[in-house]
Length: 209
Image (cartoon, rainbow, N blue to C red; front, side):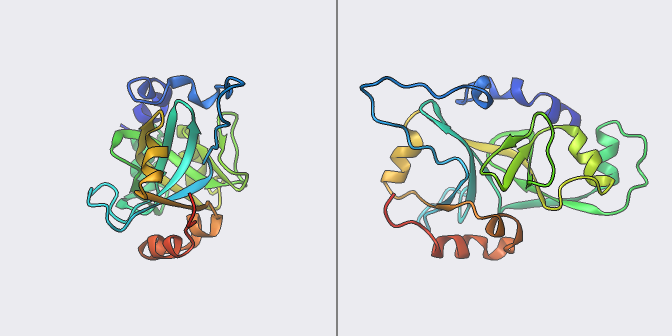
């Protein structure tokens, strides 16, 4: 049901710890509260001690983070390869003679029917979210059509699901060294082999979080 998880993205988020308006909400805070440090655009690197199978040696791109909570997409857990023609058929496209296939990733355990595409900055739509300038995110079926016509981004990661944190939860996990961080370098995100991504990112981790 590709069309469903693209078109119902915002609606689906209302049932999670992240408010549906998070994509557009302005950051607000009171004068007597400490400034919030956003990790949007950073990579979270799972501690080697994590035993949760969803996050064992996971690398997560943070796409939203404010006082209300955080959201990220796991980018190094491949699920299955799917022909582009099959994806187009599922979203109602009649031209299914397209060749080639794409790797689909498990983006996280929350809302696994919801699709996200992390991609390079050479492609943009009105609803595209700028993650860190060189890495963007689009959740719209048109990007699949554009990819199939060689009109999409040069680099992309198609993922189902995401991981979310309630207010203060990510900060607590960072303090307990559940996660380490490193800047979301597009070479790490798009070009490093998925088998080596955790190891390479872990070697670049920040020591003081």
